[in-house]
Length: 242
Image 1 (cartoon, helix red, strand yellow):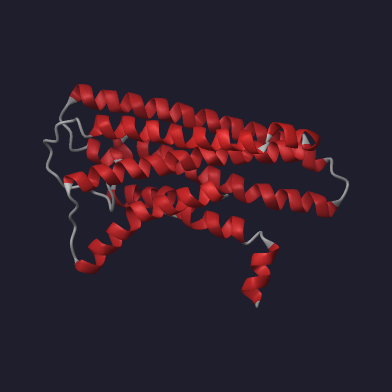
Image 2 (spheres, rainbow, N blue to C red; image 1 turned 135 degrees about the vertical axis):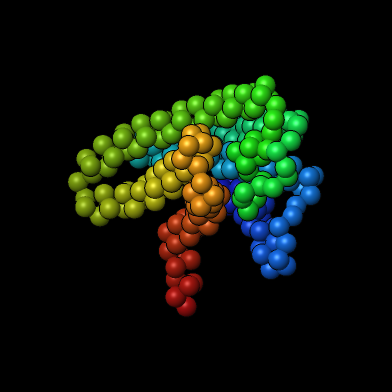
């Protein structure tokens, strides 16, 4: 949860403050270096967040389906290694995309149809066919990796729900479902919108649709995650009531 909160904070701080600044001051500009930095950090935090959500699903699977093995499968060292792997994978993914995108010649103007520097919007400004295909290939590889993680999440939740339905206590089943369903809903929203934003055909693209999809995957999950996970904490709920 600590690592997830850091990625959520990073995602929001990468895009929203600049968009608010432009809105309040009536400007629509960002420097070339600032755009590159924004793209890198956004891809870095978003990738790390998705890998952390996958790890959290594995944590739930072990806790519910293999509770007696939890201490050996998910000890402190294993958790540290998985968290480090999530951050390292996010860094590598962001570095590859940023280096490739900003090596492309941009000859279609310099206006992005988005409130932050997003890969599909920058690709529209490029006139390099080989570079475009190279970036599409990187997006496809990232998409396949994300889809593989999603299949793992779905398979894990199938096993979790089968185990939960065997719990004799109605209260126990409700507790397990209330723990898992918000996480599954956020992952589904995150994956579906980011895939649509990056892999949808140009024929269905429109400024309003692009904006809606970008908000759904870049702002909504990082905003909702702290609410979902913190409001499950009884001590925090008691403090809010007081």
